[in-house]
Structure formats: C-alpha cells, structure tokens
Length: 109
Image (cartoon, rainbow, N blue to C red; front, side, top):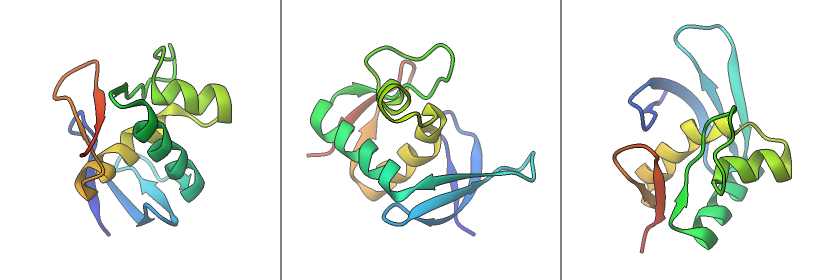
C-alpha cells in the first residue's frame, strides 16, 4: 500500500488514485477516510483558479479564504481531506506548498 506524509509530517497509507479517488488509512485507528475523485477535482480547480491560496485543513475554526473553507461551505466536505490530497498533488507536480503555517498552496507553473 502506498504511503504519504501530510504537510505536518504525519504518515498515512492510501489506496486509489487522484483521478479515481482515495481511501486513506490511519495507523491509530481501524477507520478509513474515503475521498471521491470529484472532491479532488474541486481541490485542483480551487488551487488552479486562486493560487496562491491558503490550504485550510482545519475543521474548527475554518480558515477564511482557504480551499478547506470552500470545500466545507460550498460542498459540505470536511477540510480534513486537504491533509491527504495536497501532499499527493505536490508529489504529482501539480502544486507546491509553503514550508510553515499558515500553509499556502501555489499552482506549479
């Protein structure tokens, strides 16, 4: 199973792809987080159209003017998905992320 690291350095395992969707597994729990391919498409569009943009993976409080806020406000999707999708988008070369908080996402040129 592929492994990833959140931007904070927390490890996770996943199945799937950025195109089809992801199932994220956590070491400390038997639960998994399902992330639809359509959710990943929303994240890509937000980054592409708003770069540079705040990541905003916090659930409470929501980070104003962030991708996470848009996910929750407009689609009722937990901003937590940003923690797992973003590092894979960086690995793919789609974008980059600042190295400290608040995390800012930049669309790759």
